[in-house]
Length: 311
Image 1 (tube, rainbow, N blue to C red):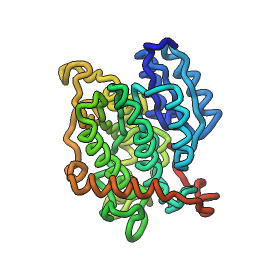
Image 2: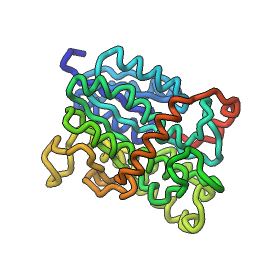
Image 3: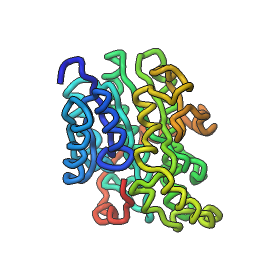
Image 4: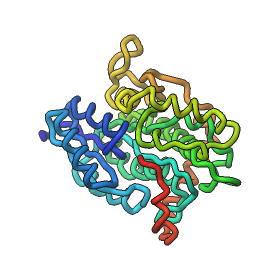
């Protein structure tokens, strides 16, 4: 790797959309580091990514549901200098309500806080370098987001995994929109990418009990739709956001203003109005800061992970 080689970090990069994104970035000449929980999957993914480009890839094993692991990953990454590209791809949908080792509701931790904290720990170096791109994956699940106000982590009332996931993704999109405004003029671009429904491990593991009524009634159609798009095709939004290579006729290569949200076709879409509300952005930011600052060990997480759906 030369000094001019661009560096990219992709979380949840050992399979599905994350792996497809990492392979594409390698093909664009990036030195790609992928992050995941499983060593065997990680080694196999690293080999695939290395074969896709001129620069050997790297794998870091880390369970990003633990904020200590997020901090350790940031330390490791910063030691090599500022990143050129950060893709926060990791996320999780869970059938049962459980807490991470920090005592944080798992969906919110995995699908928002891990990416939030990693970004906050790395972004100052990117700003100091005057360059960089941050891509946060969002989701159409926002439309079914639990309505519990975003001034708290826990959802009120009965827990439905997909609604909790949509709420976490809403929080993350609001953070993304706020970050784009905050970093205006710094040389760091902040984007969101929605891959849509696809036949990833997470998609194939969906079950009706993850949804509240009446969405549960439509689950057979939702499940059928998952298999219409491969993980490789679903990755086109995150790849377009990361590289600036949009579908023909959409925009010039690299001509993506900060705060753009790319939809499943890899073209700009209008973000959910709630995510652009200054009050929501302020509330999410305050909650994220306070939660990350007050992490604690919780023994309830010791066995709860067995209920998690794959990344």
